[in-house]
Length: 61
Image (tube, rainbow, N blue to C red; front, side, top):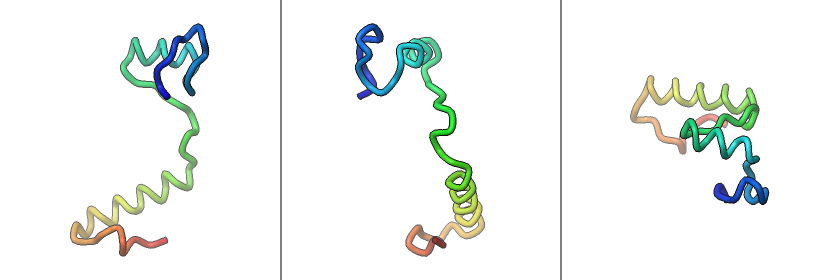
């Protein structure tokens, strides 16, 4: 749930995060994705750009 009353504390976002979202149109959540996952995603992207015919079923694990 993203929406809620900031004063009631509903949803996973804090009141400050909701205010930032309302003001900026996005929220930055630090460290939500770890460095290893980012590295793996960038490697997959580089492989896909190198060979567009490649599918996710052939991705290295």
